[in-house]
Image 1 (cartoon, rainbow, N blue to C red):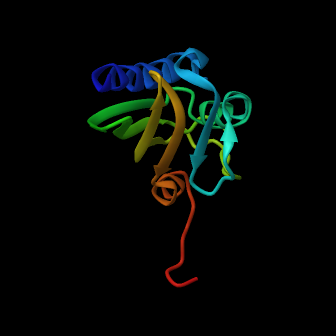
Image 2 (cartoon, rainbow, N blue to C red):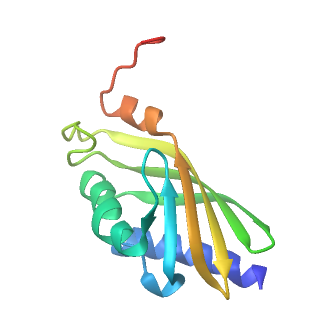
Amino acid sequence: MTAANKDTARRAIEELDRRHEPAEEFYTKDSMAYMLNNPPFDIHTYKTVHAPAFFSAFPDLIHNIENVIEEGDTVVLDVVCTGTHKGSFMGFEATDKPVSYRSVIFFDFIDGKISRTRAVYDQMGLLEQIGAKFVPGG
């Protein structure tokens, strides 16, 4: 089953990049997502809030999968995301700058479908690329 789960995780990311929204056929009806600095959210919120926020700011965003690790019913993707800052994101207006940042995504599976997604990405690195200035210790 894990080889199928690895394939499903890859396909879910490929479809996200293609459709600019999660492909619901890969997820359980009660699938939940956990992302850096956000309360947990369901697939509907992922589709209507989170994915549109990223893809409106970075319409050419691509998740380049570098490593895939699986253990039991969990698949982990090590991803480098690349795109161009074309729209407002977290208060920063479009810069037309290219961006590249790393993300690690954990997918938990039940009966071959994604039941939980946990994602951590280099938010500080991404924000610095689009103009954020961070003061050490500030």
